[in-house]
Image (cartoon, rainbow, N blue to C red; front, side):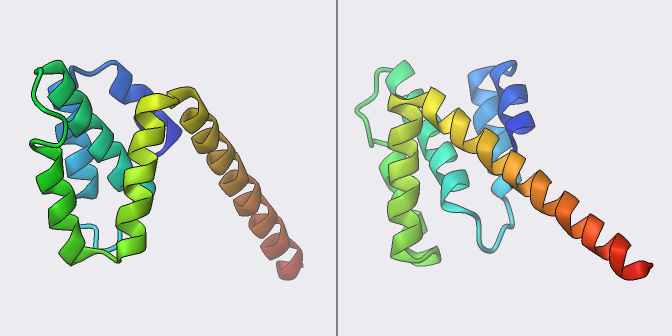
Length: 119
């Protein structure tokens, strides 16, 4: 899972290396989350824009490769996430933060429940 910490670290890394890091995080994952795929797609699209290539010239192949690997709903959600990431990165950062906070709260609650069960 790509965390808020992972995203913060990515901001201090050269752009091309950001892409390779996200690719490594996704490498070998059987069922990546749509958000994770969307992050990679947004980075690839950003690279096309930086290099003044037509949008989709390379990222389109990436999406096409996902069609055979993942359910259509995941691919569509990844595309929507990439669009959101490119157009409204602050909103996406808030979603990540709330997801991380929610997960931490759930883990804390579970640990507390286990501790009470052990008594």
